[in-house]
Length: 118
Length: 111
Image (cartoon, each protein chain N blue to C red):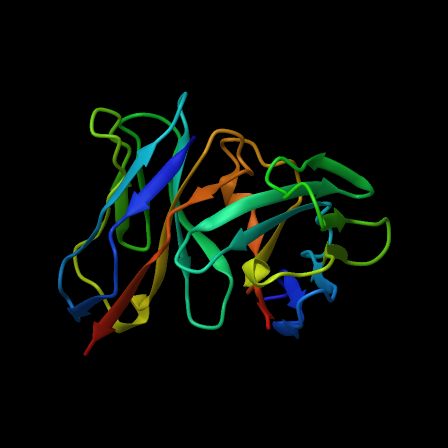
């Protein structure tokens, strides 16, 4: 299954460092989504990107977090000056088209990247 | 805001037992409802979905009915197998991509 690939799977950062999480969507998919799962909580939507565009970032924290999906290469979720509260699992998903209400089955999820801030 | 509440796990069942995982939701408007499954070492996969009241989603022997009057979308299977051991997530969406997930319910099926 050449699905959504995320790396690293596990990342440890000290407080104040930067974390970069990478996501390669399914080949041919041009829509990428990032979700975060905090301990003891469900996955929460963060951001929706198309190639070179941010479509919806309503779930992104206002500071320190950014995401990009360049024309070439993987999507990157960047967290600057990490704090302990950023420790979570970050899931990436992709779809070939914009996912509407009736096309939920086209969203494919990766296995997640676990960030631990010490 | 929109939210999903699902029963706490872990749920342990013997093979061939009946499964119910409860899911209730709170939403403005008319969301679509989903069940996702995560097998060990894999990403989340869509299991089934329903887009309007009284719709029944079904797949691989699993079923769930969109109940608007009780704001519920309970997952059921008549006879579970060891291979069904996984974490199950209930979710809702009004946009199709901004999915709102529950915390997940771990299911372990023993032979």
